[in-house]
Length: 243
Ligand SMILES: CCCCC/C=C\C/C=C\C=C\CC(=O)SCCNC(=O)CCNC(=O)[C@H](O)C(C)(C)COP(=O)(O)OP(=O)(O)OC[C@H]1O[C@@H](n2cnc3c(N)ncnc32)[C@H](O)[C@@H]1OP(=O)(O)O
Image: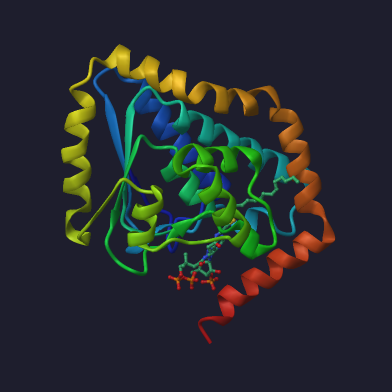
């Protein structure tokens, strides 16, 4: 699955919906057993959630958007398919969440390709299920520091903290993901799928039990004047970079 939403693969409502439909199609086709998730945007895996969906819109839109973000995470996190990410670019926040929801992560060795949950740098907070997904991957202490400081880890550090499983030269990222896949596909499917569910269901259940409350929290939080202002300032900084 090659993500293509130029220029930065931001996760707009339309793009989230496309990803969700693609994933559902692959999951319902018995011929498919695995997905390699990668990007078609040079140098960028994903810039994360689309800030334009969270800025200057109305509460109904925020609620619809957040429901789609939840849906995509639940679907990826609990997918019965083997999902491996071949991370071939910088990967921020919501994009990093997608990669963390995969079963295995290969990252291209380029110092520009940092990844992490950098929400605090924008003046916002990673929701509890983003946090839980990170904790499940790197452990509590590393997650606490990474989340508070909004750290984006370059490849060597991402490997060292366990945010990714392998770092390879840029031109080998897809072949390394394919080689890894062979090991996962050699395991009897039902045993691997049930084990994945055993490991992940408690984390997913927490959101499933609180989905509506989580949407309401998001809408309340994102609608605050101070948060809207912080997001506008961040977007402005991104644009000013060019001048
Ligand atoms: C108490 C209750 C709590 C409840 C929960 C509450 C809140 C949680 C809420 C939200 C969680 C959000 C998670 C996220 O994912 S936020 C997004 C974080 N992403 C980033 O910080 C990355 C920002 N982008 C960049 O750093 C760079 O763009 C990047 C390194 C990816 C690429 O750099 P490059 O130089 O190649 O390209 P740019 O010129 O910067 O960008 C091109 C173009 O794209 C626009 N853009 C970039 N990122 C985004 C984005 N995430 N959304 C929308 N648009 C984006 C950028 O502004 C440029 O636009 P233009 O100038 O060409 O118009």
